[in-house]
Length: 465
Ligand SMILES: Nc1ncnc2c1ncn2[C@@H]1O[C@H](COP(=O)(O)OP(=O)(O)OP(=O)(O)O)[C@@H](O)[C@H]1O
Ligand SMILES: [Mg+2]
Image (cartoon, rainbow, N blue to C red):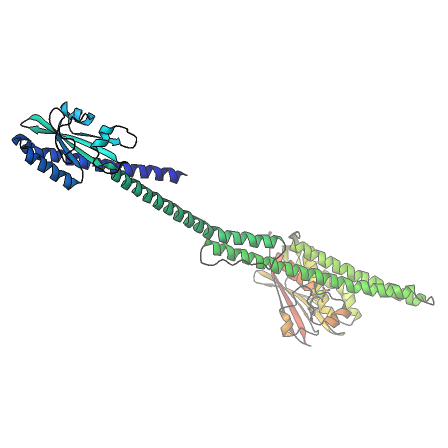
């Protein structure tokens, strides 16, 4: 819209400028003609005057008439107006002593035969330009030059030029418009692709990725988006895996219990001994279920950041002694010797419940994966600024290939054996998480059929020291 207004104004301005240029040119020419007539008019040579008028008209392709001081035509290039008094206001202006002037007459709208008779053009539609200039001889007005031109052609040329300009401006406008549409598309396309990707993701398609070519901010954004998708997808997969593993782990004791209860239900003869045994088994399964659910809850709480560290000042060696004490009956039942070696007494700020579970899990594993008659040894000592606890055993060991996985959730080296020992594969992942919360480290070293050593290092935080 604004463009249209500016364009119209521009076209009009250019038109007016060119037109006034043309007018000025013709006016100057009329004045030049007037200057040329000075000498012939002074000589009063009618023949020479006519010849000069004719020549001037031919040269400028117009009609030239020289009038005397009464406004009567003395020499007309078309020889029609000779002797006539031409009462034009432009003539009168000069006769009154005015300077050169001009005017335009549209012959189409004028019914004046007089004006028509002046037109030199054969075309009736002529727009007649009338220019007059005084011819001064020795300081006095001796006559008037009347120069009649066909302005229609000038007008037509102007209109044509204006039309051409309009066409050009429209073309430029169209080009600018297409360009701007293209450029906007160029900028909005990547955004559209991104939002489409986000929409797909919102609808649950986490495998969705967006492709944005180039090396600009958009492609960086797309890359970041894809990275986020990838992480979310992986998170989603781990979560699904976790839920599926957890359900599987819960299913096993449940189906065992179901079988036990069904056997009891459809027992033909009442056998109190068998009933007691089965009930004992069911009780054990419930314990196991309880343990699994407890572990799962712990892990879920860690994941959601709900597990907070509640540090208190504690004695690490005493904590380990207590844990060993709880496990000793189990170990002794299987002839496993359990040892706690305190190299240094260590006092530190730590979460007693969490560390207690850490060492319980480690020692429980050591007992569980050691054949009858073996040994389990826990050592507490100082290693620089860290407290170091090692739990070693003379057990079955862990194959090299499995070492890096034992801290993974639900990971068990020997699935079949774990079934009988009742492991879920969650113990060590909890150990790892709790130790990380304490900003410590946990490592494992093991040799198959020789034994394993788990090493925990914890920073000693002692406010009193
Ligand atoms: N001291 C050890 N000696 C040999 N193998 C071990 C030892 N500790 C752990 N493992 C192996 O690592 C696996 C993972 O141990 P983790 O404590 O996480 O699970 P679990 O003992 O099987 O089950 P639970 O969740 O009941 O602890 C075990 O299944 C076992 O195969
Ligand atoms: Mg365990």
